[in-house]
Picture (spheres, helix red, strand yellow):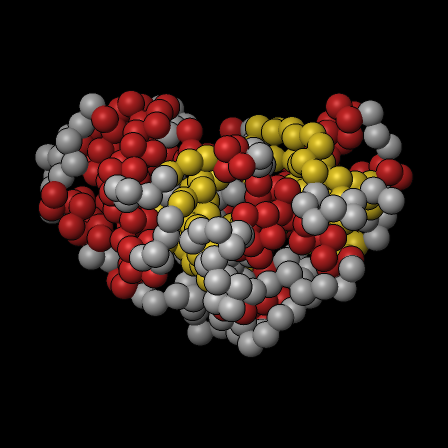
Length: 370
């Protein structure tokens, strides 16, 4: 009998809640039945960005936002159900990633924080909610991220060729899918995806993003700035590794720009585009040199200039959207959290220790009954 689950995801960019209605049958691959994206209100996004950095009165602000995010997630699920013509009773569960506001996997006491109160989501929707996926992996010594590689492997692994799945959200991460079934899946965060590009666009254009990378293309990369960026210690760390807004942010960029006070903003944007492309290409060449095809998902797939730079940096490797393989690149992560929720309900592990560095397989998340 088919079962429906809903996956809810809001990433590092904090621009929208993506809701995926996923139908699970006896077939090995579930079906993305319906998708819906609910924009995050500008005022809420600004508050989330503020609480993502150290500041005063953090606990009160975080707990208020915990409820605000939960209401937004519940609304996204409700709108999705209305479009599908389904009732809450027809949905087995919601898998909610929540909104990450801190991710500190390498501190003295590693931690990660995703807000969006799952108890409130369950209360408002009348649907059992599975959430808090990352902390169990971290409790077992892992990075708590990335979690998508297990899902990537279920969809895209093949004996026919060596593949990389590249997700370009605010942060970029890769999943290596070897054609050899005896070689474990591997993956890690390569560094910035859209996060620096979007921040610079907001600062200088008043726009949430650089559409198709048009502004970046109008400038020329600054070799000194690119070298300074690529010299960052994060890029030399071996996996497992993960990162986030706590590390790659406007303060990080401003520190690199200190030696270039007269840099033109469009040239900085061109450099940031190149930084994303080069750091991804370097990671693939170093850790997945035999790659024969790269499948891309996440918002970065729509940045034409970035796609062109990746193709240039990875000459000879086909670079294509996951849409070519039947999966909407904008909703793959939301779909993945529906899949992870199903695994949790079935008592099946959802992490990959080879990716996160955890001591072993773990059932992820907590279950909040309707």
